[in-house]
Length: 190
Ligand SMILES: Nc1nc(=O)c(N)c(NC[C@H](O)[C@H](O)[C@H](O)COP(=O)(O)O)[nH]1
Ligand SMILES: [Zn+2]
Image (cartoon, rainbow, N blue to C red):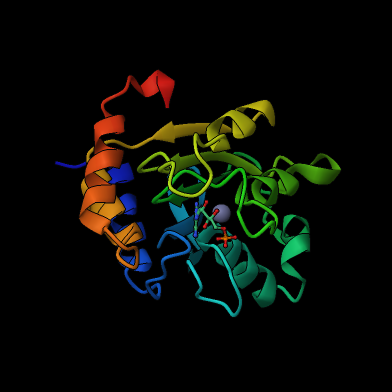
């Protein structure tokens, strides 16, 4: 049997497969849900789902914000606050801490949900560490920890996630192999 985390990660991969392949980013999928003993899916998103150079996590928030008639930047204000329930994000790849475009990184969009004393996003699950392709050693996890947001790597789907993520790149097979070579590191080093 697979863990519920693996099932959600597989859903993130299906979302990522809808993203138009580009050499300049990764194809990623994201799911936002509210969890107690049951899960309530609040939103999903994938890279470039929405116009512009958008990320999966960004689209996930933007889609929820739109339904609630606020801009993506204000999504924290409309996310549900319900006693005993936790806001959880599943993303196929570690949320970005830096973007070559200079646009706001997804870690910032995630930590921003905690503004105004709200709990915001409680925990982020991701299936693979961001490869060094664009920004070198990724800082996303460290930045989440620094903001007091839990994160966890869901192992087992790295090859599938990376293959989808780099489909639009020059040498996708090479890039996957090289990134997998690094994935052998101890999870604590992620
Ligand atoms: N977690 C995550 N979700 C995404 O939807 C996505 N595309 C990336 N990609 C991270 C990568 O570091 C950036 O795509 C490059 O740094 C280029 O930056 P832009 O995307 O052009 O802002 N990461
Ligand atoms: Zn991002």
